[in-house]
Length: 470
Ligand SMILES: Cc1cc2nc3c(=O)[nH]c(=O)nc-3n(C[C@H](O)[C@H](O)[C@H](O)COP(=O)(O)OP(=O)(O)OC[C@H]3O[C@@H](n4cnc5c(N)ncnc54)[C@H](O)[C@@H]3O)c2cc1C
Image 1: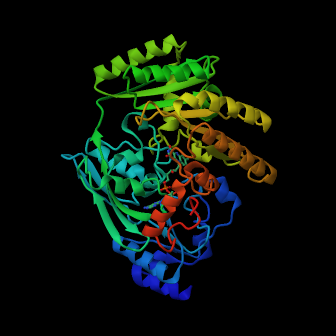
Image 2: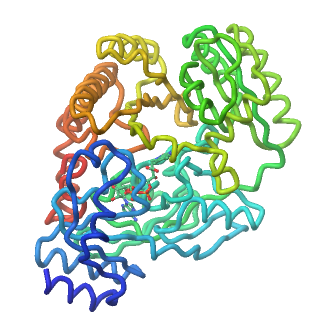
Image 3: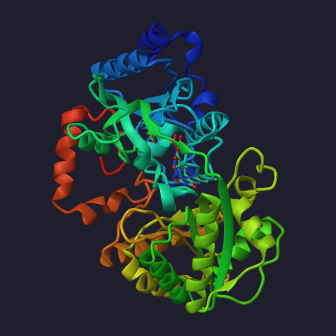
């Protein structure tokens, strides 16, 4: 350890390396239950300041076979940055520069440790729009979002974090530095290589820089919310809207009980008796926005949808679109002092959502959790005919081992249902430690292909060892 410490100090300087227990403990937990119940303290923490330092650290780790866990904001809820085999935590937050905002080519070039909120604000100052804005925007980083896929408030129209990527600089598991793509919106030779590193959860390379899309700031932005008497009707309304060519930027579909959970914290009353509600957001030219709202109300009403109160809509919006301006109004991160929230982010095709929902209602009854106000959240995205992303959130008392065990069993059953219905293990939060045991079930023989790719890019399994089934 002493030798490793000295060599790391030679690379980044003494103030950016620490073996102190209090520093290391800070990197032993993320926002996952897996992180809370496990004990994953790294041996050493290092904070590189540039790409060549990252490359040198990875090369050094290879020479002594010590794993390296890349760490952005540590806000993942899947345990995918946790140092399960100890070793080095590579904290990227010093590499947080916005290198260039190119308003002609509509790109922003950033270092991977910049927070989403910083990029959003800097781009906005120039009159442009960076679309990936998760609820964790104030602390999560570009590298973390691209490595987990990243779903956000505006994904329905603009796509997820990975849809914004035009170019990447990556340090491979060997320490070799590669640059892929650029400012071209199309690049035939490089695009598939870029995809390899998106959603890889730091297992194939360390992203050091990214060239991302930006958009002109929308002239108008409006929202409405609609209540439905059944979840099925609300889903049918979404399908009809998609077929009609209506493109909202935000589509949050909640089982109604979940609205109560969310908005109770915002101290707003949930109006009426519904089973489901959808929050729609629209952006663009004022006339187009107004037309889309009118058409949305009409189509939803054909499925029994009723427009909800504006105060309710705005409270819901503020509770999901959290920025520094609204931080004090949104108690999400501080509202779980007594119990931890966890989620199941499996995703099934739209045609199987109803079956998935029915299975989930049966299971929550079986596990005796119907008293919990948890529900179903769906976020539409432009990838295909509204593939829905499904979250089931439940607050867990992590002091109660039996409850944790029960929750893990429940999760396993839910993930298996999703796979049986032709779904996938994660929609945007990553596999991490949460679902790594079922990756092979989803991929079948393709998992061996993935393992071979991993071997090629990271022959000693230095990067995030133990994560994602590696
Ligand atoms: C309150 C709260 C709200 C949230 N809301 C959302 C939401 O709306 N949408 C959403 O998608 N997620 C959300 N999340 C989950 C989480 O914030 C995201 O997954 C986020 O993108 C993770 O970014 P991070 O910088 O914190 O990454 P970390 O947690 O540090 O790491 C996540 C993964 O990325 C890898 N990684 C990090 N940086 C790099 C890099 N430079 N190169 C290679 N690999 C890297 C890590 O090794 C790890 O595997 C939320 C979490 C919380 C706690």
